[in-house]
Image (cartoon, rainbow, N blue to C red; front, side, top):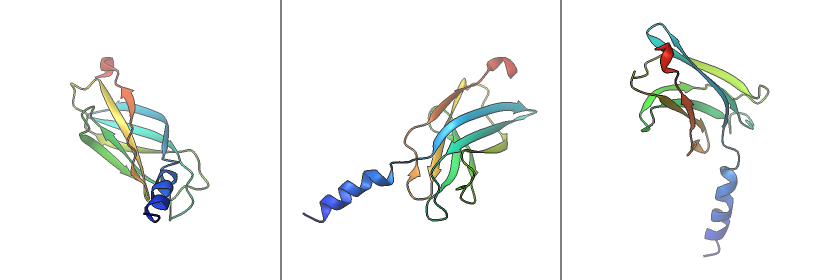
Length: 119
């Protein structure tokens, strides 16, 4: 039983600094959409870094994923975009979820309302 306690105590520390979504822009560009997401995360190098963000419908259906191929320890916060995304016309909002390579996908999302007048 003594071995279980240190593992339980250590688990919250691994999730102490999930990638934080600090800004999002969503723009219709022709038939598709461009989504730009700014993340803040204490990247330490290849062993721990924010490695993706995902655009989701309100029900959690993935609409597009932007893989981040390297750490950004000297560029914080940083913004990356995904173009040509198809967003169903009946959606009034989308959600952004971030991921890091050691802790996985964030449990929470950032909701982004869509301006229906630009459709």
